[in-house]
Amino acid sequence: MYTQFVDAPDGNPAPDIASAEQVRFDDKIDRGITIEANDWMPDAYRKTLLRQISQHAHSEIVGMLPEGNWISRAPSLERKLILMAKVQDEAGHGLYLYSAAETLGTSRDEMVDALLSGRAKYSSIFNYPTLTWADVGTIGWLVDGAAIINQIPLTRCSYGPYARAMVRVCKEESFHQRQGFEIVSTLAKGTPEQRALAQDALDRWWWPSVMMFGPPDSQSQHNETSMRWKIKLFSNDELRQKFVDQTVPQADAIGLTIPDPELRFDEATGHYAFGTPNWDEFFEVVRGNGPCNRDRMRARRAAHDEGAWVREAAAAHARKRAARAAAAAEDAA
Ligand code: BYC
Image (cartoon, rainbow, N blue to C red; front, top):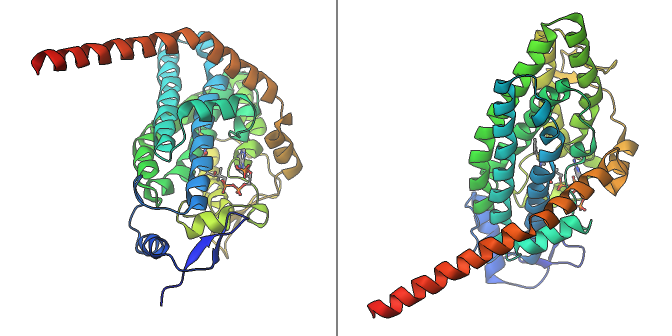
């Protein structure tokens, strides 16, 4: 006999009546076969994916703002070119992700509207200011470093279009992380003032980066369901631990100090033990009350309004091409 599930009102699958589609879906998930756009999927799975992928896309797009702020002030032409390429990559990531989310049946316009109206979330990390050039390096090192740790498992997640989009994103994030680490290590090896800039940026960005992985598992609403569906392959706390374990030796290598008095290597577990982030601050930022939330949304709304003519021109061009193609097809017939 099949064990069947349908979506309960809380969005989680609950045992109920039989459905052959549900059995096929569960079987694919169990056997690690990807779910594709045209496959049957439970509504709650679709909604969870759409929520996560669209929030991820919004994060890439809003994430262009803190670094974009430094393109005109990068300290050399080479640094400027690299930063421009990185910020453009983030725009590309946003586009792949909006496309992956569209396969679930929601249009990009609807998703963008959800962001601009404040209904959709984006990563907490982009609500902190980039005060100095060292912040640009630190974002690459820590934020892109955290992104890689979170996103490499997503290349193996259960939804095909999301998993495939992540492959290229991860390759580019790896370049971003290296460029960031290179900026910070150059500063750390520089004059006492440059070294102080690097340490100050690490002091300000460390805890927000640790919190990027989401609330502790004990307070995560979606961990359990998303892990059962193999949308998430690791929990928030597992990924956070990997990030700390990977990053502490990097800070040691360039002689910077992680701002956590409780940080120590635990021989028994083979992992770094670390302090507790300020979760009140995290939830305030997620609620829209971080240092830059209002600025970020203002900038996105202005960019959307100012880009209206580009969208209209692109749509007119597409209509013209379609009309030309239709006319050519008619002539050929
Ligand atoms: N910020 O149940 P939970 C990048 C929300 S882009 C804001 O654990 P989930 C980059 C969460 O949405 C980085 N909100 O959720 C770009 C949920 O609220 P809703 C973005 C957060 O989804 C440019 C509630 O808290 N990466 O790296 O299972 C330049 C409860 O959380 C945050 C991705 O989006 C947060 N940090 O797990 C450089 C990766 N954390 O939705 C770099 C894909 C949690 O119920 N996303 N919330 O209203 C994920 O892996 C997961 O969505 C998360 C959260 C681990 C982030």
